[in-house]
Length: 297
Image (cartoon, rainbow, N blue to C red; front, side, top):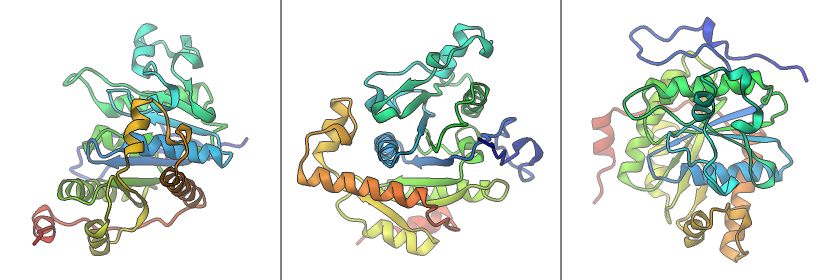
């Protein structure tokens, strides 16, 4: 396979005054690469894991990379807390040539490849470094060459240089949100980070995924104001809670009419994204303007 090296990070410069982290390695793959962001606890890992399965059900070779130090992005796929890249590197004193693929890659449900980047202890290091080392290791072992889809599941609503670093690799960034004040406020800050990165990297906003919400009226109102679009909606269903407790994806749960509808929505979303989706050019609001905009009666 001919590998098209894109996004040559070393040749790019961050805008003047930026405190973003510049990585020394580009992802270098022809795969579709997505970065999933959203407020902490909004369901990014659930969304990412079920979306990974949906892509695999379309016959795609999928790699999911968890970027949270809690390393719990992929446990519904693997049924365990997979060893992290940082743990594996520490075990060989950071001599990456001594690692085997099985030391840091776990195969999950329906063949989804799972990697947990892990992270340094709190307050002692940079998340961007961890993501960079993970991508470097994947390249060294040629794991990106036969991959169709890469999903970065990124920590909470942190938009510092470290945890914004997956945006330097991604083709599209997806934002998961609920229909409430805090989730939309966090989404606006994430949109601002993506807007800044898009000035120097190919990443574009791919759309908004409404999650854990019966309605989407406030999400839709915000989207219309800033230039975003809702591309999927997953209501707050008990089967989602139960799937996490069973350490399973939704595609492994007992069939019910409501679950069938959710699975169909994931399959539709995967097909839409793989076909290219619709890159968006949203302009975030200032914090105070958003505060006034989200005022309820």
